[in-house]
Image (cartoon, rainbow, N blue to C red; front, top):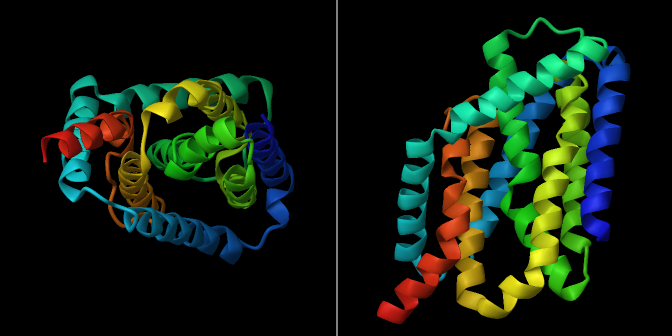
Length: 237
């Protein structure tokens, strides 16, 4: 399990560097780089969306998945997690030198949590390494996560480094379950899964850039049901 460990290390190091040395980073870089991260997320999302095979299945997965997320209000549950991590870490570690408001803090924290833990690249990369042993996708993701963690840790502090925990849990579960999941899939299902992940990544990019505050956390169930709906649609059509 090389990829998840490298990815977690990149986030921890980036979070520490950003928190400790953030005051040395010019203000213009702090303000502009999140826009670049958002743009990168949108670019990756578009590239993944282009892999779509069964467009109706992808749309249906997004609609049903987001409806499930809204019913269970996953966004609020993740906000509660964000508050808990922030309060817990700030009791033991120095608070970041930031004038960011509580609402802005939570919005940024959720966006980065989604980007780190449940992006299409991370999910598929973990499954791919579990089957093939190739960590390339997660290593590429680690480069982006390292610099993202540095910039966001300047604003959010040490809690950014703690996001390595949920990310590693998600990736480890996918890595070890991939040998059971992947034999049940085919190229069409994987392509449609990537397309759904791309839509989530695109929404995350808009959120990071502050353009539109998509309820990204409530979209996550779409990733779980994407492959089953793709398979069902293919069998019906």
